[in-house]
Image 1 (cartoon, one colour):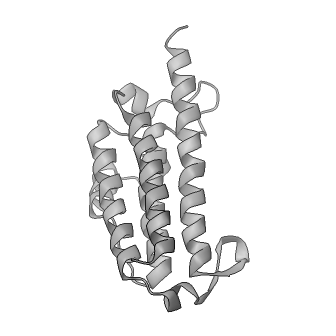
Image 2: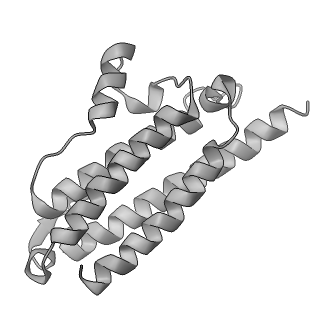
Length: 163
C-alpha cells in the first residue's frame, strides 16, 4: 500500500473509532433521536449509515469500480426508505456492521491503488477539479465532518435526558 494511503487508512481508523464510540450504549430511542423542533436534522443512526455509504462512494470514485453495501441494500429494502439519513435503527450492531463492511471496501481499494491512479484528473462534487489524491482528502474530511455531527447530536441527546 502506498504511504499516503497508509496514512489515510490510519486517519479513517481513528475516525471510525470515534463513530463507534458515539454509537456505543445507545438504544433505539438514542439511535433515532433528533432535537425537538428541528426534526429535519439527522439522527446518529442516519449519520452512521450515511458515512458508510459515502465511504464506499468515495472508494468507487477512486478506482472506478461500482460497489454497494449489501447490508445497506437489505436495510433500505426492508424499511422501504431510500434516504439513508431517514432510516430508523433498532440496534447499534446494524450500524457497526455497515461501517465494518465499508471499511473493508475502502481498505481493499487503498491496497490496490497505484500512484498513477491517484494522479488521474477527476471532477469533484460541486464541479471542482482534482485527482485521486483529492478524493482521498475528501473521504477523510467528509467522514470527519459527520463524526462531528454525531458527537454534537449525542451531546444534545444526553442533555435531553437530564431535563
